[in-house]
Image: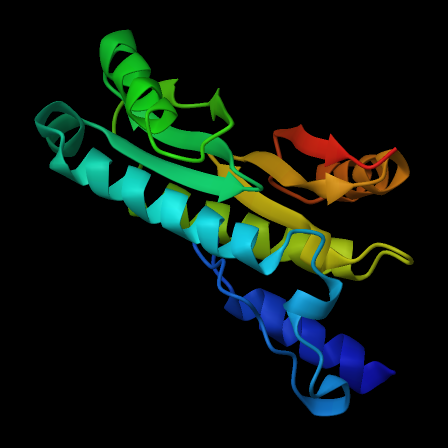
Length: 192
């Protein structure tokens, strides 16, 4: 049992906030993939990866966004979360408009803030918070970390996934207790 927990925690820590590829857990859980416990279909997992790639690529091709903003798209079950900074409301809204036009996107949550590009220090702190939140969720009894995607931006933790209401509430409570977390935003789809 300890080897499963240890292996899972190590694997989760290795995933950065950009990681979304299917994870194969080794050790005692050899042979079990996310496809066997994931609540999204394998096709939807691939669609989410494709959506993220397309939107982030469009952002890098847009002159205004490329030059003055730092924005990123994350997709879970075709729901897109936009995070980062834009220098003004016009570019913030332009990013959302670009994301909405991508095929298969069902909804866009625009959490881009107005401000300067974030510093490396803040970015690395967000990555550290994400790792700690993932570890805390993995340690919660009867809560599968595969069902919850964690994204952190400027100390705000965004939780995405397909969960039962109780699972979502417990994940949010765990996340809110992590040092450095300023706010927790739930972007869940509920099974009940």
